[in-house]
Length: 225
Ligand code: GLN
Image 1 (cartoon, rainbow, N blue to C red):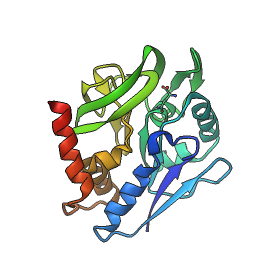
Image 2 (cartoon, rainbow, N blue to C red):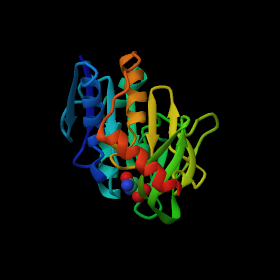
Image 3 (cartoon, protein in one colour):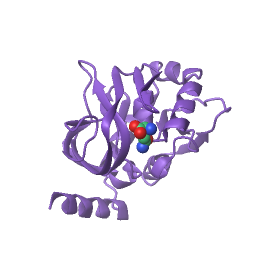
């Protein structure tokens, strides 16, 4: 049984990011794969999961989540082979350092060579990127600006919006995907949910027609016009 674990949805749940777990769970089940969806809140032990999901969060909850995760088994589990999908605050927490609450710098988990400084202005609005040969759509609302270390690939090139720095969004290294896009982003981009699921399940998935797939096509058209 493949376990999908949403981490701290009450702290890192901006714009329904916990829904990303539900999307992976349902799209797997509709193809006949048995998955279990669980979530953990502060104080809970992290279960053994195939993938952990981190969402966005306001500065205070983000700092608390980072403090708790530094003490948790997440880094070890990822080094041992677990996957992670992270959005916004989650993206920042997995990096080396991030700045929130003015210019105070906090330590991240150091799983990714990425550092987040405070941008001059907040990045708020629609975001569309060219990611993994597809269009990734969503919306962003963050004060952070993220620099990737040498050799760390982004998720994609920004076409609309800001992402990490106006040029690229997020990062993708083996077993870890991260983006600034909310939505929940996997509901808005079914292709990305399936790409992650195929990696997770080690199996090519049959196409799935759903309302989410139709809405994705419409949104791409609207943002391109
Ligand atoms: N607190 C972070 C920032 O403002 C992340 C915001 C978010 O997750 N939407 O950059």
